[in-house]
Length: 418
Image (cartoon, rainbow, N blue to C red; front, top):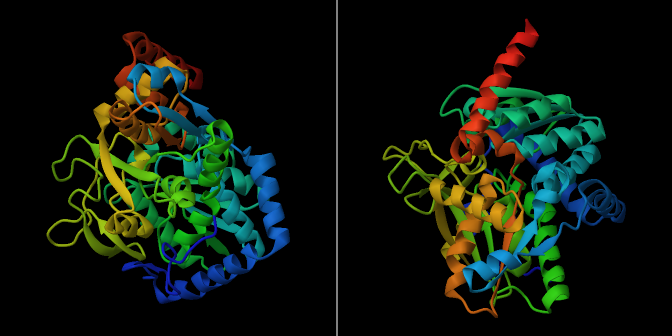
């Protein structure tokens, strides 16, 4: 579909009142260079050719659109399809914008990459593309997230990245973003900040949307091929918002398609117990852009709570803020308890393991499907697979035998070091 200006940013990077470029003066030349590079690359056939080759032969696109026949029959309502981004290289949608941005960095002659990560999927994808394209990689990760997503930390280090735990603040994604920005300011001449979602100062939100929109393009063509219709609903989890924008973008002008973003409801609706920005968030300027943020009465960013590290973020991408105010996307939330149950339901009925983040979208589909007729279609963007969450699942879902194995293995590991 040809893009209209309705959901595009203005020349200053604003979607309505949201977005912008609130950055230190030292970063303005780098942001302008990045914007110029991005705009020229989109018009360069050689760049597009290299991008499409990497999407096909490195990422493994297109990813499948899978009809969940068993789950649909069990719920007794609408047909549910799963766009399985977990089958992309490195296990999540993050690889889409990492490949795109590394090609931009290469085009600008940058050799050093700085990134932030929460769940570790963006860090893993960044580490992978840095290894492939010969870039020096530095990934900042909240110390709390590094502990709960330890498998991805191991793989990032195996790929040659330096993983830097951030011990200040809440030790979560917000703090990793701040640390990465400080690094970029210090090393702006030779470094590119490979930002991990559709947020940050302009032009980052639009860059990440451009490289993620392939997800929605594939959903549209695949569903038309399978059942010759557009979806009635497209659902995705929303942290910063990259996988959701990727899934939604192709349908923004298709008014018949209802779009639903699902935030992290955490442990409940009380202040400080969730990461649902549209449930108590206020407009503010943080980390280079204007959007909804969970803030206290003094305007300080609040701590957030979610079982999923990737959604445990106090802000939301500016295009999502605009889409919320315009009423184009409906935003709901799912609690940690609902998410764990959805992971089990998908696994037991379809043999697919969802990441905790992605399962937030699945919760909404499970709620919605039984209320709809059988001729309706729901597509859920499963943004990542669940192996990275093994130890969280083990703590919350497993039998005692798994815990006993971990304890025994830990003792054997310790003995082998001695």
